[in-house]
Image (cartoon, rainbow, N blue to C red; front, top):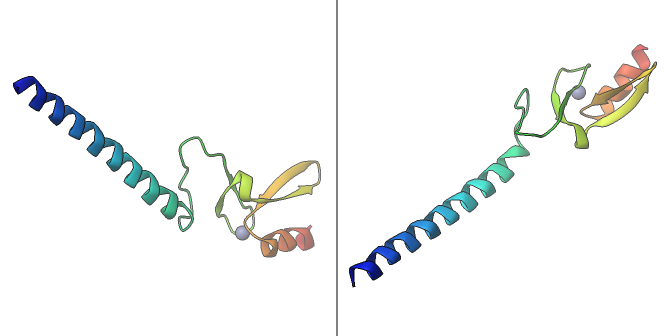
Length: 86
Ligand SMILES: [Zn+2]
């Protein structure tokens, strides 16, 4: 009987932990869109917009070949600004 109770407690503990992790994951996913500036996420490659200095997730950044290197931009506005300056 006691073993059963213990198993139940362990099972509930595992479920709570799983749910908690899920909730944290959702909160993180929803919050990442609004975050900006220097928040370098775990394993997510971040690049810096040379025009306004904002950090952008590399996969979402706009890219442009400037001279012999590729630069990353947060928006078309910054990209155009960089291009016209050059
Ligand atoms: Zn920018």
